[in-house]
Image 1 (tube, one colour):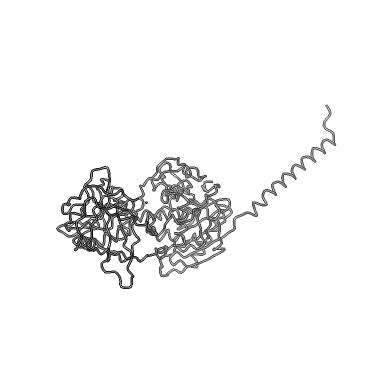
Image 2 (tube, rainbow, N blue to C red):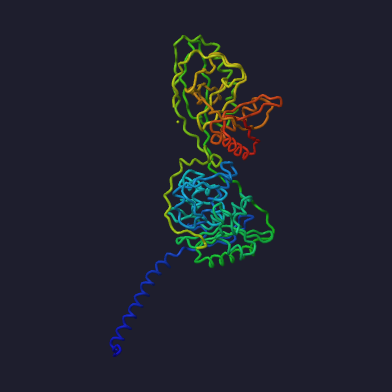
Length: 568
């Protein structure tokens, strides 16, 4: 058999050469835009003891932070724990949205409940996107609301060029930060939450459903004195790292954005930290960061006056109304007190004529006041999630693993019966859900016509009373009478909290009022109560379940105020 001819061999070689050239052209065409789209590089080095800049390169350029975002997610989680909003053993529900986050992830399933401690470990050590999303949704109700709160906290910390769109750092339009801002955040984690900072130096951690390995293990093992903090990677961001290291009396924190590989990023970080230790003075006065400068709440000055009763028919049947707690000014505790209210009502009733049978006047419902900013679960941070803009849903991209308000019905019952002295009928009725009672039970006997009606269940009633300022401010013009009411019923709850003993009832009442205004979200429908004991006047909030009592006491204690839980 004869072999292939010379012409056939030449044609075969030519076809192979053309295919090779075509392959190289395709590879070049694919690689060129990848090179052009390479993430910009930025770096910033800081003396952690003073917050002073040591080195900066493109430090204020807005870039993709990738999983460095989780530093703020964890900062928010630590802040919530310290304020008593949640606990480490609080269980968070995994949503379908959270479970569907791309890797790196812990492997959470929709409908699963998992303790916050495990979510923190997974987000900090493994950089798990699903865990970070569950934290955000658990703290704020949705990831978009949480991202808005993250951005507000960033402003409070001095991070002027940062905006968040999600809790995990996946690439999304409008989600950005800078090398300087991420370094500031790293320093804040070290100084603001030293009790939790060690999580960032763990090489592995128990995340509840699995033991996870650190994405930063390689750098922690290779650089002397390194003890954190967080890695990050997406295609748009490149290889990012915020690191902290301590040698002797010096601590340096630095950030690298846009590294070309894990090895390149770690090498550059080592050089930056070395330069930082070389330039930073050995002895320097430590300047700890000031508390976060959160947005101040707007104080609304209002005066509530007593209706001056003239001799006329008294009200037999009163239609009750409910309204949200009015916005209080700072001096409310000194102006409106339970004793003043009781005295004013008694004088007004003493001058009133008996009510004709079947007669009735109606007090109409007051307009719902505007909700005071800074209430709810983010009160201490002066944040109202409802006024924050909803963020766009993040675009799912591969993420790092480094291992790759009602008017009540009129009361038609018979003439009310006198209430026993010291009975709960002398107090304002239970507030509507979410608004704690601001006033304490009066110890004076109540006139018969003012006692609460004794009607059978299931109808629940509330009592309307006109609050008064006996001596209005001289500079304030007379205001229209304002009606404030509270809903009835405590739900059979028998837990509460005690704020301690006081020398006078007035002092205890003022403490209760101040606390109710500050912690309305945590206290919920709790009633304020002053107990006259042999040792003094005890200020209590009662009518809570155990969980609410624990949460409220935690938040009150966080304000450096004595608080203990009282049970059934």
